[in-house]
Amino acid sequence: MKGIKKLLRVIGIALLLSIVIIPFLWMLISSFTPAESLFVKNPSLIPKNLWLGWYKNVFSSSNVPQYFLNSIIVSSTVMVITVVVSSLGAYSLTRFKYKGRNFLSHLILCTYIFPPILLMLPLNTILNGLNLIDTYLGIILAHLTITIPLGIWMMRSFFEAIPRELEEAGMIDGLSKVGVFRKIAVPMSGIAIFSIGLFSFIQSWNEYLYSSIFLISVNRKTLPIGIREFIAHYDIRWGEIMATSVLISIPVIVIFISIQKYFIAGLTSGALKE
Picture (cartoon, one colour):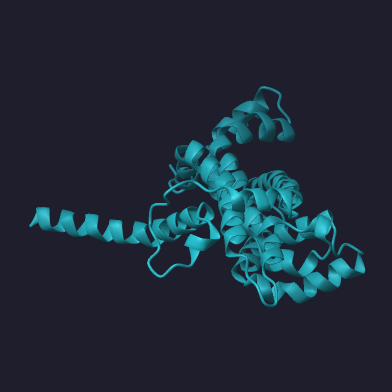
């Protein structure tokens, strides 16, 4: 009986993985397949040779390098700001007593519950009033409305898991409240901060809705919306689309594989309290 359950579990996991892996493999194979072999009736799952023509087109005759740079600038900035604001905000909610603290806590969570499309119109009004449409700062602020609420809520559980006695001991030794936060709370939540930084980077890197609305000029577009450059009225350049999709996926995959154990530890370390 145990053997059957184990076999069914393995089959279930394999099916779930195939849902994710097969489309990615098809995208990867298509990015190395020449045009004459891309739309044949019985395509080969293994390309006969690695054709780099689509990648050459992407880098030499498109704006993808600029889009890549824009995505790096926006995502990195969103990551840094999210980590700083989430850490300070969550520490305030867990360590300081002031009127409306619980209401503010739930309000922050509610802002994450709402679908981003509901915030699009008010965000557009605010950014337009501040002349921030089609700017790095404007799209960064838009992405922060997605990353900061969840970042604060996640960091709150990590700070609550830190024994208050450690902070009280630090204050007895002469540390100020800022010193306690900087020298005790932050180092002890290092994995959590690292995980939230990675999460916010990925969220910003893959974000499409706000970027497609608030970014207009070519020199400001990010990679997810830059792919539309290859879709014309009477032609869809699938080869370049597949190559660009692979380029979008590579940074996230490399980063996550390199630090997945820290990311998983960060997501679970705040789940338990003494």
